[in-house]
Length: 260
Image 1: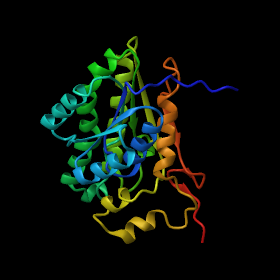
Image 2: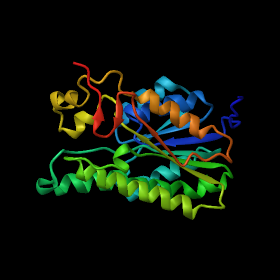
Image 3: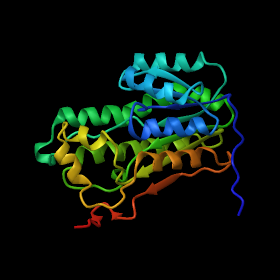
Image 4: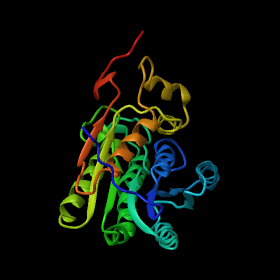
């Protein structure tokens, strides 16, 4: 079977949030090879500069905090100033903090997770939606999680935020019906990156490593970047509503094969 691919030119701008590491950085690199001019978005300027230097002329760094209305407004202005058409937004900025039970849950951690995963997605989507629609072939890809539809002990705050993010994405798809903007959700399971689990456990590397202990070949950031590129480069009439991806060792949220 021949796989069709959307024709792309350098006029296509892809905005990737959370691009300073992990899935975001891998996605920025991959989309540049697909012909997009990538706007790599994150808070850490040094990491963005390093990423963009590695990509070359097909990338622009944009320092932005998705929890700030003013910062996101500046991002929209930066993107508009590049010229070309904004055809792709990858809402990747997010994260988890803590693994406390609900009875001992940190309100600060829960609030941060909601602010970044949900309201960050809302802010950036709102800011760039007019440009995506004006392009006539816009695509919004949001990186969710298997935590978007399955809860687990110690994950109340993160699963609550990811469930809310999924509700946002599904609602947006309904509201954009008839308009030239696709809405895609990608929900990874176990992805081993440099920072996600370490940040969740407050920098405790031992706890972070325990998450993946004995798991043969967990997913890596490039696996998710590959899927983002696939979804974004289908002919525009093809919308991948939701794609759930796990390593073969993870059959479900609580069913993980660990080698001894």
